Length: 152
Image 1: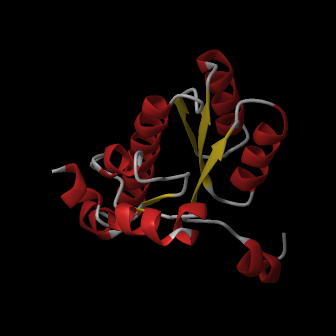
Image 2: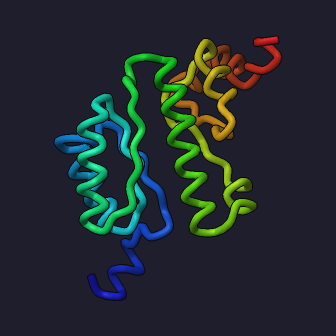
C-alpha cells in the first residue's frame, strides 16, 4: 500500500470486534481488518476454531485476541461484551498507557432494551450503550435512560 493510501485507509491503532470471526466471512473480515492494521477481537462459539483463527492471524502479522460466547444467550452476550471491552482497554494500555486507556469510553453496540440494559451497564469495562430501535419508542428509551433508578 502506498503511503497516501495508508494515510487514507490504515486502521493502525484501532481495535475491531468481529462476531462470527472464527470462520467464513467473519474470518475473512478479521484478516482484512488485521492486514489494514487493526487489532482484532474475534467473538464466536467454537474455542478450537477461535484459537486456530487467532493463531493464523498472528502468523500473518496481525494482532488478535478471542472471546468465546454464544450470542444467542443474553448472559453470554454480557460476558462477551465485558471480555471484548477488557481486551480493547488492554490494547489501548499497551499502545498508550493505563491512564489513557481508562479515559476512553467503550460503548456496547448490541441491542439493548429496558430489560437488558442493567446487566450490560454493570460490566466494569462497558461505559455506555448505543440504543437502536428502542430509541424510537419514547417510553422504552426513557426506561433505558433511567435504568439505574428503575433497578433500585
